[in-house]
Image 1 (spheres, rainbow, N blue to C red):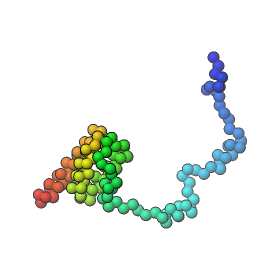
Image 2 (cartoon, one colour):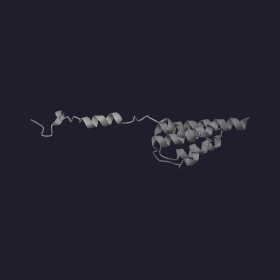
Image 3 (cartoon, rainbow, N blue to C red):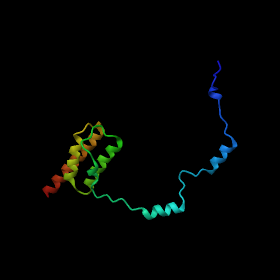
Image 4 (cartoon, helix red, strand yellow):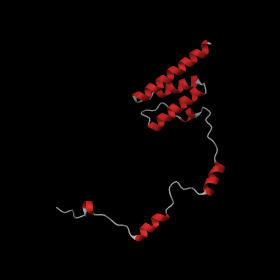
Length: 124
């Protein structure tokens, strides 16, 4: 049985003109010195000040991986800045949504950590 379309052995060979165009292509990771200097002059470091949680729309049902990371990063950021009450509030709002078991466990762990830190701070 022969395949009318040529099947597996239907191979196209490029012409000489197409091969010439390939050598003129600029690599994906190429950046001219001028572009680099312009980017360098415009660049400013991103300063995190514990306000990432403001970008969240909680509670969230079945968050994507990126959304889950943003939720977690906002909680970690508040925890890092010792804003345990605020972190606890964000955790509580996040736990109201439908979450997968692993992510829910992580949030519950942060909830426990924040509660311990608040208890230790008030007990001192």
